[in-house]
Image 1 (cartoon, rainbow, N blue to C red):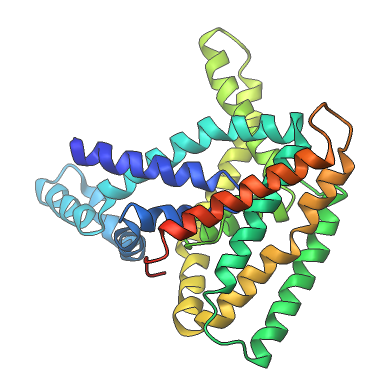
Image 2 (cartoon, helix red, strand yellow):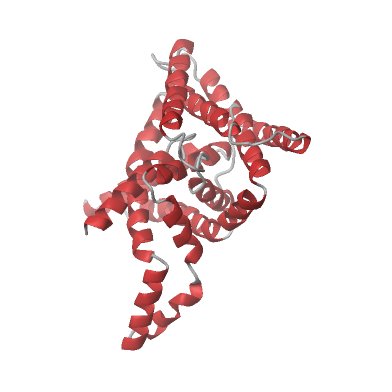
Length: 308
């Protein structure tokens, strides 16, 4: 039980990081010493190993299933996943409230986080070749164009929610790359944090006798996002992992340059909301940005000896 609680708390810290654009849950996993175990557990999962569950009435099948679950480290993944989910449910409400009520300091903070993260991660690119420079320029242009579209409004249809889940989960397990950051690029950050809060409120409302319809409506979106994340975890994450293993510098240059290009979004959000609240001033945005950048640089200083 003590081990379960320890893993749960480490998952909570990962989830807390994943809610904030520019902060990586993968980096937190490195800090708390479970990153290697997490990657091994994810890549060890094989759907064929669950076949004994179809014969759960058979003692031998139950024993075989238990052996396979332990081999794939499923208890560890469950404890970690519960911690991550708890943090996301709790903190997404806070971040949604901050982004909608105090957009200038919030997006100023996001700008600082993302800019400093990009600066730190560019240092991980070993050698800058002409090809990598071209890849970076292309990634910056792509992110700049995409965030231009999402700043002016984007769809929240089920397909885009599904894609957002698949993309975000890949980033969540990569050290230095933020899942919430990709939600921000795709224009789904405020929407998904709001939907998750509505879903939790609806579940609580059921206890008080409220209608079931809001739970179904919000729950459908959350489920589609979850399915996208699950599929992305076992497909896209392997592809990204392969790319990092065989083309590390080029892949890293591409991912980090996406962060640079996406800075258009927080700048636009800050500019659009000047004067909306008492905190909607340029000086507040600058201070928030400095705080965000400082937070990333402090974490980087303390984790400089970790091997990414």
